Image (tube, rainbow, N blue to C red; front, side):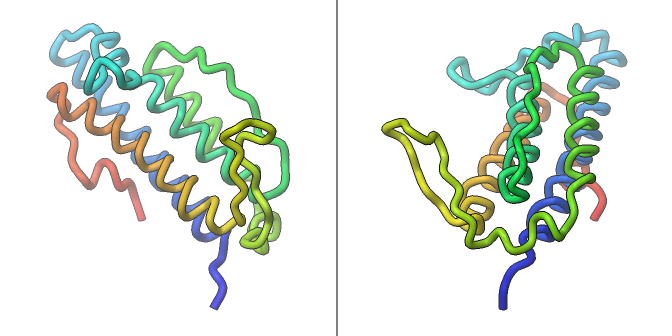
Length: 169
């Protein structure tokens, strides 16, 4: 049985990005209610050598749009990575969801055997099938950055739980 590459990508990215958006709303409300400078959360990190919350959210959105774009055989949309507020992060997530919502099953299904080349022309070049790219690289990377975003906020006292992370399914 073959996997539906569309079903394993677009709905998953959309569900978890929607959950991330909800988590960011809760975090912003937490900062307001507790009179915490929002930048304290936006720039928080779990350890000094890790990316801050803002960058974690940007990277999560990047994986959602880049994985689906490559599987659909279209150019990956470029984002500026200049978000500095909760509202700007929410706009990035909304833009990403709108983009992936515009992709169809016909564009993505059948990409399981597509060759995806990561970091082409560099010593770190890696060639993967579309299915390996999605299941063994793209989704794990995406979930890592969403989970780290959640963990940063939870570590900083934002009252969120697994239901918030998961979103509606």
